[in-house]
Length: 417
Image (tube, rainbow, N blue to C red; front, side, top):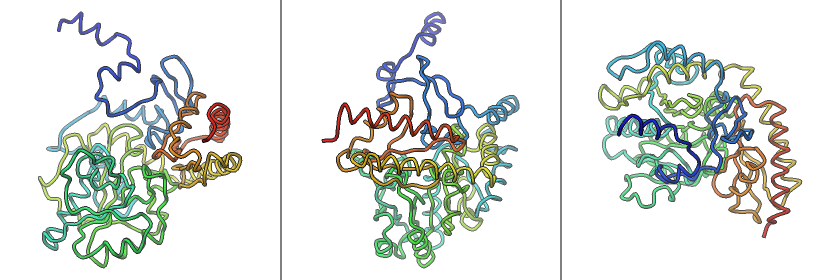
């Protein structure tokens, strides 16, 4: 390819249609293409403005292009980018100190995503069980409707069969139980279980909070059987629920915690946090990653933790949550034919659809997007709200106004059947 042709290819206009022409069709993105954003404001290729209540699926919790993070990353860009795991670096050491000082953990392992963090956690749990108890202790217990990533191991542990169809044979010794069902947990967790993995609040499964009694029962069962309790806080962590991590408000401490998404505010990073005793079973060479804990990602994540892990910041998350919950309860009361009872925690909120609108979550989000509000779904029957944690009162009110207009428009043009 000559230089002239190469230049022409990289500068020619691209549109949503380009996605269908050149990308593997694993997604079905919106028709609009975002090109610029700041805070919760976003603009597409045509200059249309949107209010973003998705934060990139609970990722950009400090908003798009946060000035503090931009400045920190820019400084690090001019120092050092990448070293590989034959060396360490100052930013990752500072980040590890910050996370271990702020949580139950003594040790941190850094990677690039939530799936990788969960992969590492599950591998560590099996290694720990195999070494301490023997190869018979290998079974993993997860919950139906859970989501833990897209690697073959983590998607098998996730409790949604639609994500594993066609990828068989799947990893073995994995069982799924109903979420928030203590009796089912007691029946399933025996002496052959290496680990129980659970989301303190199920995100992709419909934004369903875990009952404190259920999570406490899992803790007790793991203690009785020698299994490790893994909390997947990829979506619920880093301030999303109004605590730095959701376990802190549940009165239950896991053995391993996984975190990603908001940890990097959009810069790819994941982490697995655990204790000294458990971490010792991952010796040199037993696990690794080329990019995990690189100076760029660690710099961003350290600044994220320092900004979010402040009492006033976390208190504001809970205030904003109360406002959105109040608005959505009023919305559901005004449109009972469309919505059910709002649920969630902090700024991870789900609004289920009423029976007459079952399966139409995407229709609702498309109607809202047409009017300038970006929302998520959590399955076909639940609208998911995950705005940046810096959302203002005015933005909360504007989102309510737009969503009401979108629902009213839907009822006028395509009422429930």
